[in-house]
Length: 254
Image (cartoon, rainbow, N blue to C red):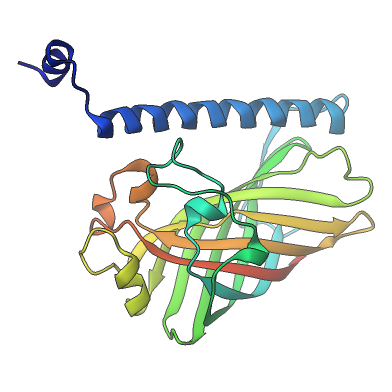
């Protein structure tokens, strides 16, 4: 007899299945909400906007499509579910939102640098960038990190005449030269962590309209197996935890 049939006959239900179903519905709701917000921002910020897709040759002259970025960050023990406000309806065992100034900061830091190249733009609305980065931990952690990522960036905000604003999110890979003891403890799988993990690093940038080539960057630097989000991190040794770092940096577009 199938689980569903047994549950229907006995009146019992599987709490885990229920929570996973609720999470999937919450994710779909969130994505739909984000799409709606982006559409409203488009109408408000870019009247007569163009949706033309344009490919930028990565081997051509930069012409404003290249950038260099430097940052300093502090590691935090605050979980990403709290940092993003992804409560238990979105991620099982998630928590309430915690603002960056209330993070549980640790005595470990990350100094990093990265280069990036815009490879695709969608009118004045959005763009895609490739980034390669290098970081060094110091304090109570000492690993060296390298990463490569694809960033999707949204540009259209109605207040851009006052402050040029973008928001971006990445997907990529992050390699750490050593598995720190703190990462081992945060790995809920019990597999002892992994050198290679998924790299998710959303960021928010601000620039003056007359100096758009210089951006202040606030980035949440996160490496993990992603198991708490999509439930399957087999590609990363089953790791669910990792490391979180709140960073402030400066980017110059060339």
